[in-house]
Length: 612
Image (tube, rainbow, N blue to C red; front, side, top):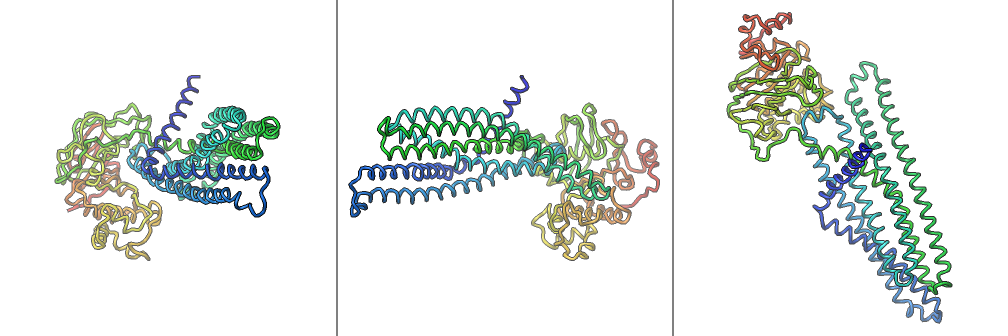
């Protein structure tokens, strides 16, 4: 019982938070919102109620008789003029209503999309590693669409319904108070029944939306890794996963459909009862209460219009529930705390030398399993314990060690992709946890094992770190990265689109484009994370030559399993058991005969290359 209550509170809280985000973007455009409010009221009052009111007056005058042909326009002229004005102004209100709704959606969707993008882009890598990119895109789209649905429901359904109830009371309370009282009681009963029943459908909508997001995630995962799917002949396997996800969508949608149909049937039955009572009252209205024909017409017209609007409560509540269900996942993401956040008074990092000092570092992953590049670390295992390391400006160091010793984790901490629990990391005496993340990462060039390329031109990918770079600077960076030759052989040269994640290029070509980007960025600190481990010998030689150019004059951290890539560096750090087990040059560590020497002996065919 307690669990069910907690679940209900959570659903209510999520819907409330969704409205909070939607209202936040709506109130930034008060004149548009006010225009929508006034135009909707004018549209309903004029075209629904004023029309019927003047038509009823005409009917009453006709039933009185005595109007000759030559007196028609004299007697009915004011009513005709009133109807013309009512319809003309009502149509203007209708178009203003459409404009206000459309304009509000356009402006709000811009703000909501920006909010979602900022939230997702500022979240930590831990957040993104736990989620499908395709699902996040789907959730963002559904969140924006939910606002459009709610705005349209407000403008075209909910507000007209409220205005209709007020108008029918105002227009009929004086001539037929008993009728108004009976109608109001029936409508209150109808509203309560519809509300209570649709509260039960809300979780079904959330489940259906979650199933849709899972389906999008499965599709995105299969398409993103289509090469693996095809090379392993797993089309049928992936189709099975997609089929199961698709079936879950069908089941959740079917449950929602059955529940909605049941609610709709009950609501329709109540509407039928209301119309029966109204019909009987109108049929005997003249005989029992002496109500005029014009008033009876108004009563029927008003009541029919109102019941039709109430009959739409079925679809309105269904769309409301669907909108809140669609928005639920992104609402929860927007409410999630940012795992790595800037301090309120964070200042930009200024790097003049590139001196790095790590003191008394403590770090462990908070989640049950945290994936490093080469291992999975248990929650109970400390990655670093009282870790200390000083890297003088301009020094090139290699980070080596067995899998799981924290090599990649150290680079992530230096980039603040994760935050440490204790200790400090300082660059040129500035604690990076007190600096803005963007300014930190703009001072560090990062080249990972798998080049991170956008589905854009080679020129745009190289200039990503410096979008204002000139054509000559881009070409120079490409040349220093040993990439210019292959780029110029491409049909479109620098304008060649590289495909999603650079799939149109070979591994070595992608890596050289990434290195050209790092060269052009000209950051004082460089991190190379297994930058050559996935390459063939020829590509590795070209990339290593490019890395020599890249490291020159920069403080460099090189993560490597292949020790030949770090043997010629100024200094080699061997990580083990949460700390540093060995520290020295390649020759010093070989002579020491410790862990590094053991790893070197195991890697037969290793070679030294001079970087002088």
